[in-house]
Length: 142
Image (tube, rainbow, N blue to C red):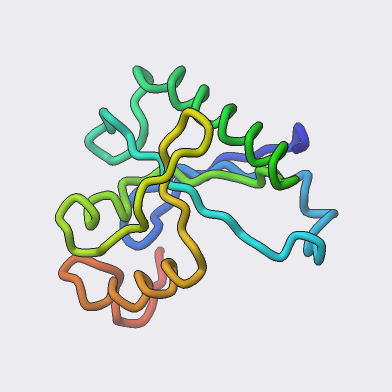
């Protein structure tokens, strides 16, 4: 993990998202020794109305991220390259429109570990869900 991080606000699947990305890793990618991308969802207890994290959850989210990162580095030699904060899939999971992977314990944290198969399944389901990802062509933002 480098000190060269950048942060972006944008829309992901028509939902506001905050993205943090370790730009210092760009000189090391692609890394053929790390062919697996791991997505971990951590659900916010009290998200803001726009779906982003509230300042009241900052300390607990930082603790979860630090513990999770430490565990993944120690056990698997993983590299934290970024994070996305959004209510995106959570609203579909809460409404039981998609079926997420089961919760698993990872140290003292319970997480959903999404496999490539899970991600591809949900990508196929989303266009058929009302207010899911658009089936139409991308629109140019002016």
